[in-house]
Length: 239
Image 1 (cartoon, one colour):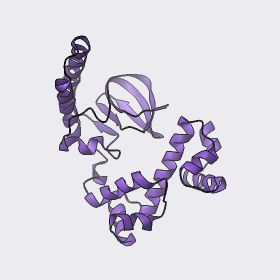
Image 2 (cartoon, one colour):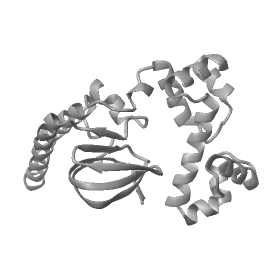
Image 3 (tube, one colour):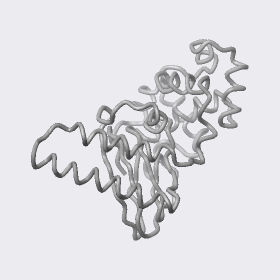
């Protein structure tokens, strides 16, 4: 498993397999498109699969409104390219690859490379996603952004409601409409996810991870993690 600070796109072209992203298994086959934003944990696909892969830093794509949701930390992980779109996407990625190779040889400005990447991302952004229902509500997006900033310092749902200007009842209603879960459940899930990431991708002790995530006592972190995941931090790391 690895965790990177750049975006990763996989367009699967042959075979069948399974890829794990943030501890959730995703079946991959012809037409599956997997996107990992920076920070997510990936286990590369098992099975006999081939894929076109595009890697890029957050700063490289051109700023486009149409790709904002796709590239956000809350964007969709898995999409499916309909048969009619696969050839178009494949050609777009191949054009990107050709321009990248040309740039390596000539050291020309990367303007065209950046625009070609933008075109690929715009094509991907318009694909249907099973996660679309959780997006589109600006109020929920504000909560997500505040949660991403503050999950390591506060697990109190009322704090988040106050920071984004809603009552706790309103925030819970917004979260339930978007995900079917309360604000507190989403906060705890985000903290537990970060704990899992740190357990598998660092050598930090359980106590150090708990401290980084705002727990004053190691035992409190262990109890929290066991409640959220059903196992101790040590057992999770070993598994």
